[in-house]
Each structure stands twice: as C-alpha cells, then as structure tokens.
Image (cartoon, rainbow, N blue to C red; front, top):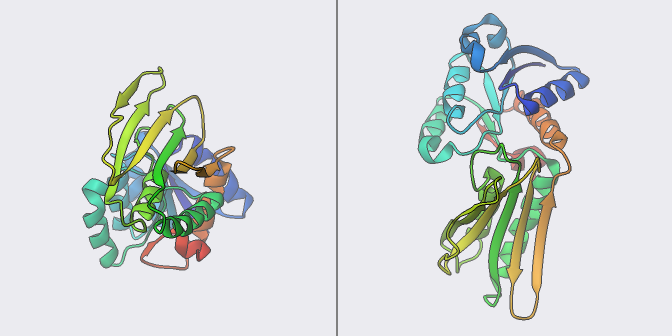
Length: 250
C-alpha cells in the first residue's frame, strides 16, 4: 500500500517505521516546509494519507488531500467544533476519513468498557462521576480528544448528565487554571500537562461507600502509531466516515 504522511514529528516518524516494517511504501511526506507537495504526483499516488498535525491545521489538510482523491486517516483533535459540519459534507461527496481521538488498541477496549460501565452506573445515582486526563507538555488542546470521546460516551448513557465541562488544567509550570465549581449535571474533566506522558485517562465513580476507577495508561506512543497503520490498512478497502468501532467491531 502507498502511504503519505502529513506531519512528520515524533508520531509521523514512528508511523513511518511501523508502516515500512509491515511492507508498505511511504510515497510522500508533507510538513510545514513543503505544503505544495499536496499537489504532487507522489502524493496523488498514495492510497491513504495518515495525518497527525494540530487542531488548526487538520481541516485544511483534509480538504487538500480530498482534492487529490486521497483517503485520510487522522488522529488530530480539536477541529470538530468549527469544522465537523464541513467534514460531514465532504464525506457525503464521496471522500473517506478515518478519524480517531486515539488509535491505541487498548484505548478502543477502554472505550468499550467505559460505555458498558456508564450504562450500568446510570441505575445508581448515588455515584458521582468525574474524569482526569494527563498528557505531555507539548499537547495543545485540553481536554484531550480521547478524554472528550470518553466523556461523550458517558454523557450519552447517564441520564443525570447533560454535558461535560473542563474543570482545572495543571500547566507544565505547575500553575493551575480553570474552575473547581462544575454544575452537578455536568461531567467534570480535569487536565494535567506533565513531562513526556504519552496519555493517561481515568474515570472516577464515587459514592459515600466506595469508589470505582477505570484507567488506561499508555506506556509509549508506539501503540498509537501501530493503530494508525492498522487503520490505514482498513481504510484502503472501505469508504465514508470510519472509526475505531469499525476497525475493531467493538
């Protein structure tokens, strides 16, 4: 399979290594310095482009890839609030996007368990629920896309919640911003930015009697990179708006 890489940071390099080890070809690498290569023959020869960039760059990258007839696998987060409707329209026009807030196999399992646990906990209003996510200091968005996905899954299943709210954010310098006061009908998410943490997501259910905790802790970014390559292999043979649920049938 021919793969193009959009974004060539640590994640892009790790994806390249795994893709090559699985017998694929990297036909184009696009970063900030060579944006014109979106219109190159090399990029057009890609079966799938794997995109890991920033919230502000992602949507334009989708547009430019789709304009060349290239499917996209993307792990960029933070673009949905402004561009989800436009992406949906692009999909209806026949383009293909596999998007995930996290490509880790373990996170896919975590999300499946999170959904089942939330369905069960809807019966027990004595439990309050909160979330906490921790990431490396280079992550720009808070809460994380993975955290938002987990939170939306909880809100959809617990009737006493109507949405989620970012509580406090602990910054790399140790300062804390945000609010400690979150309405009872909102799922509180606290964010921590520390060192080079690949990602930790925890859901807490608390009552006066006990606490139930569900946690996924990534040991490295390699699991994310492998999942992205598996998603590209899947996307090569499928169309439309694809997710980790399609890939793992969870």
